[in-house]
Each structure stands twice: as structure tokens, then as C-alpha cells.
Length: 295
Image (tube, rainbow, N blue to C red):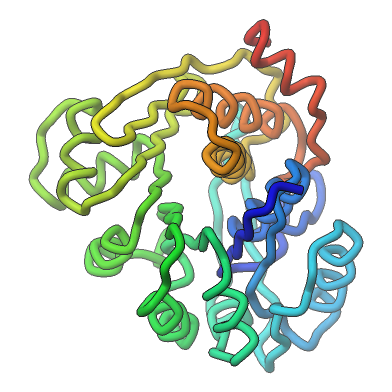
């Protein structure tokens, strides 16, 4: 294991897909993928005192992650109903007022977060008491804050996104999310120039922009690099962005350069796209083939 600690804070939920029910939530997906890649990761979340909560805890523990920072409260365990279109692209209906929206501050949570090198969270978690908890944890946080923009219907607005972007040292978003933020800010620049604008507007060190089958960009300290997409037979794209982000964090931690970082992130995301569910066991040989041959 690389000697860096990552805490992923936010939603643990079940994705109800046409082919079955899968454990998910972006922070959990990132943590599981990072752990597969050899980076010590912890998930901080909450589940309900119900059957789905018990199954989630059992599954997370079986996958090798600690459940010490997963609280159990009186709300139902999170659930997202997922529909997949003909291209494998998901749309989500996330149930509201579920356990992960009510994560509370504890001494243990504060201690583990303060000792971490990276804190990963998304825009979804800025709801109910979880929002106050993460704001308190971020007040004196000294590590790198990684923000994953997740626009889900009724779970975001301009005010929240504007606040969250201000916390970001590393930001991941997709092209549609960039377009919405640009519209809010009356930014009419082309996408490449928009990354420079976004970096300067919010003082963000690294921006990762995903474009689905059209590849991805990375903008870091004034340097822009691009990577074309991989041709894969799509299982579904649920969790592909989370896998991409895990691949990028891994690359940054082990010291890969900017271009190699975007290449590796893209390869990990492509592998997950070729499978069903958000967190299939990573096949390193297959990922290496994507890196070497692009397929």
C-alpha cells in the first residue's frame, strides 16, 4: 500500500438497475476503487438500521474497507432507481431523506479526516445535517480536498455548487456540468478556455473533465492535456466517472505526470464502463491493455 490516506465522505446507497441491485454511492465507489489500486481508503457515511443497511455494511466489510466511520441512524438506507438507455447511460432517481444525508460529527470522524492526505466528496452530500458536518470538517482541513460534481435532479443548485467549488484543490466534472456552471456564470468560452477560467475563478489546482466516449481533459497549474476515449463494449456507465476519479487520485499520489494521469484515469474508467455496476473488481491486465493499445 502507498503511504497516503484518503477519506471519502458522503453517500452510501443501493443502485437499483435493470440487471439487479448494486452497492453504490460516488464516495464509496471511489474508496473501493482506490483500495483496489493499493491506496488506503476509508468511507465515512451512514446507513439505516434496516435490511439494506445491514447488507451494505456486510458487503463493504467483505470488500476490505473499514466500516468504523459508517454511522447507523434512524433513516432508511439510501436507494437510487437507475434507468439505462440504449447507450448504457444512466439516469437516477435518488430517494430523499435517507441515512447518508444525516451524517453527524464525531471525535473519531474529526480525527481520521484531520489525519488524511485527501478528502473526497461530492456535491450531493450538502444536504440536511451532512452539510453541516462536512462544513465543520473542512474548516481547518490541511490536506487536498477533491470535489466530484454530481448533478442529480433536486440535489443541487447554483448556490451550493458555488460554495463547493470554493473548497476544491482537485475538481472532477463532466462536460454537461461544465456547461451548466458556465451558463450560471455567463461564461461563453470554449471548453478548453473554460477550464482555465474555472481554475482561476475558484483557485483550483487540478481540474479533470470527462467527455464520455470523447475522452477527457486535465488542466493542472496552467497545463492542459487531452486523452481520446477508448472503444469498449458498454456494460453500463454507472460508476465510470468514479473509477476515472480514483484512477486520477491514484496517479497523483504515486507521482505520475499530467498526461500519464489522464491516461490512467481514462483506462480505469473505460474498464468499469465495460462491466455492469459501479465497482467491478478491477482487472489490472485489462487496464494495462487499454494503456498500451487503447482497447
